[in-house]
Length: 214
Ligand code: SF4
Ligand code: SF4
Picture (cartoon, rainbow, N blue to C red):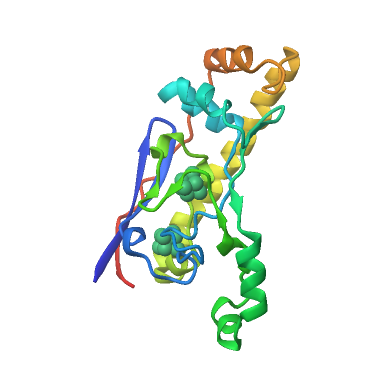
């Protein structure tokens, strides 16, 4: 079946939109806990640049997020803990076959027993503008292998955007430090402070849509 991937940007938030993800049955996308989007084993970390972008879109999301028990506020980022089913993981290791090991290769199999806090049976429960940038620009192994153009151009765009995020993050954390603010100790003041700071948006490339058979 023909599938596709495209690149979209809203404000300063880019996303690789992949139509294959909905029906993905690849090794990486199949969780051993019976949920779709097995590749959502990530425990999100919101850096200052993510927070800055979210403030523009839906500031309340951040204030609601930090009330959750599994959310840890660090000085300059927010961490959202997911779950790890250790019993199921141990059970897998006691009962795995040679074929299982061949199937997963060098992949860390513990990831297939982890779940992001935001995942639901239908996929990610939050708007892409509320996700950390790593989520929106994820390229799994299956996709990476599917097209030379994607491997080169999408990967380069991702690398450049990540470098931009690192740079902005360092700049924003320095501003907070200079003003004796941390997310951990002064969450509301820090968010209000970040809201007022001006940052340069990333200079986004135009990427071709890709169609492919997987
Ligand atoms: S990112 Fe890759 S592994 Fe994950 S659901 Fe999409 S196609 Fe499947
Ligand atoms: S935030 Fe959404 S896209 Fe990111 S890992 Fe969690 S469920 Fe997946």
